Length: 443
Image (cartoon, rainbow, N blue to C red):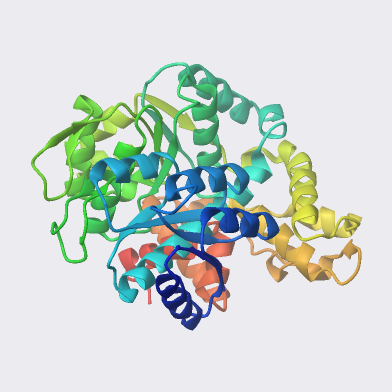
């Protein structure tokens, strides 16, 4: 259940919309103007705000900027009867997730709200991972491999070169990408993340490049893409190895010429935005086998930075564990919570195939389940107390990277009761696991 704020100076619109959103199982508040909306925002943390653009006093764009300043994690969707492309671009650059053109149907609201909440969950997961790795823990790594990765990232940040971050899922590639942006001359511009595994192909194309009204079923208005909204900033393509072939060619053109057309349009748009990309796949092998465009691989691979898995930087594990535990104690209001030596030892001895994301999920589970002010071994998942023996290297020799990944996914699915539990073990989100299971034909 999400908490939604509806802001509109027309009573019929806000009550009708609020009634529908409540029917979807969400908690809803209403405000007749921006002043009342800001008062409500000060009182509680809303997941999503639907706001009209034209209102007396502060308009919707001004309200958007205030909400972004006061509650940066709140998703804002604007509603307007006077939509223009220029207004849409301005709204997205100011931080709006999307906008609805009046009159709109309740089905449109439902579809948009579902997409917003899915993206918000991904952001929450990424935010948890960033907290686990943010300064000073990230910058004080005692692992030589991580130190080399960070040194290269700092050097690359000063330029506009494309950077390809490689490594297993859950290692913190998104954290390093955000750090590169913050260290770069573009730090004052937008940082936009595109998850290449979470949308259907035509929706992903629209998300990247935008579309015009009527370009496809459901395109009821012109919409600028994330590239356009990232003018002067950075675009991070997460899991770029999953990009469909047709979009690979359009991305290659953008990297070479910094221009593109919206879906269904002929007008060419030029955008100054830097590209950072990440993948857990062997893109070099994919390019050689024809599964990924070689020319695009070379364009992305200008500066390659490998983020080492947690098992290769075990010397960082004590500091990471303490940092994660401190953050989660605050989040779940368990300030006095401590961890026993036995539980700490179990965490230190585990091999962490899901890397830092799995570590975060495991510690958060223990923080929530601890019955008093102590995390004990019984609060940890069974896999930590009796970890499965790793497959001998000889058993994996001769297998392709895809086959090793497929077997690992099959084992996680067999041992877990739900898809979500298997995803947590693997250190990936459930949507990514669903796509990988479909790709490998795993029932």
